[in-house]
Length: 261
Image (tube, rainbow, N blue to C red; front, side, top):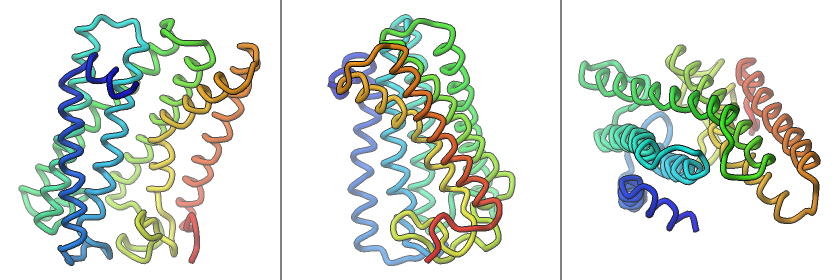
């Protein structure tokens, strides 16, 4: 369903998602045959994670856009901006991994600094679009139930906060607190197990736009509840989820690991 919706509504996004799928095996092959280490992990771990998260985000935006009462031209413009900025950011991350250098917080050479600046500009554009989605999700009547629309509003608010946490990392030019970046971390995720790590709150924040609306959809399909009851439960779930993110942010700022090993 999602596949056909995106393909029919925004062909450009569909093809950019295919590029994500092509980059996925590249990162996996790199992980298998390239033993270079950067910041304590294989150089291909980071691009692999970003390929997956970027694809999920682009697909989510394209799918949710079909609920908004925008013209087809406006939907394609917004989808195109989101998809192109995300794929260019991703290609920079893959390029820097291939070069064996950091993509984020890297201003040691002029070329690296320019790439990091481009990434920052494109992420800034996406944050502006998030703000538009928050405004329009409140202002407009979406083509869905009131409970799901409210879940979308909460999801975008959480994502906006998650993006703000990303800004905190950029402002301090690192993601760890109390310890240097690149230390001991959880397998795969590499979240620090010895110090604070802002990536935890950032991760849960950015995926709020999938998790909270998904909860609302499950609630609608599995339980025969009135609209007001659904909205109340979505609100409670959203507040608990937001509280978890706020706690992980506070925990990280105190220099404490999400999971200590």
